Length: 311
Image (cartoon, rainbow, N blue to C red; front, side):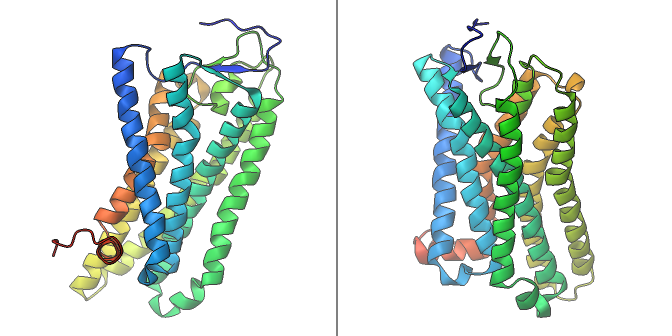
């Protein structure tokens, strides 16, 4: 491991891939995923903005999810690619702080946004006559702003704490981005208090929203089961299965990473799980929402002239 002068305020990111031909091939795959995620999420945002039929709370929330995914993958992948190609794995203290802040903001805000989307589907299916009241544009805007603000405040607190920790001689972060749990391994002081607060924070921003999502979709499935219209059942199941797929891809790796005790985790496992929620999920979300949503496919035909041959 590279040795660093303890007076330096910079860090070094160990990275994700070995510096060889195999690593280069894997990096090219990551670049392809980054390109697909950027195009897919940008197209989704553009589509919802242009098509008037998608100007509903559900799709406004979806456009924010695409924006968060776009920012999420842009926070980690460009630095990963730059470090690998240049062979210089250093990152400044400020750069590390910004990367941690934006990553945590997107992670926390997206969890809250997914809970808002689950509530939206619950109201639409279980209380359709009251939907314009319970999910007005004003309430939808409050949900979006609340997700961004709470995520930013929580992220700022964690980032400021991490940057003010005294670090030992080794400043090599065994990760491909400035993930705070990986940074804590380098601290010269006992961080058990922060680890406890981090566990509480993870529960608030991951576990509670997940419980809300589970409760919402439990009520939705109960209501769908008692529907008399087969077409309504089919549409409700299609919508709910799409959301639940996205929720599973988002929550499963986060829970495995941040709700396990440090003694049960390893840097290699954390990096593999991080690939899912920082790289793969932002690419998969727009694909899932476009290919499994008839309204989005119809909007694509109207706006982009796509899938004109599909009936």
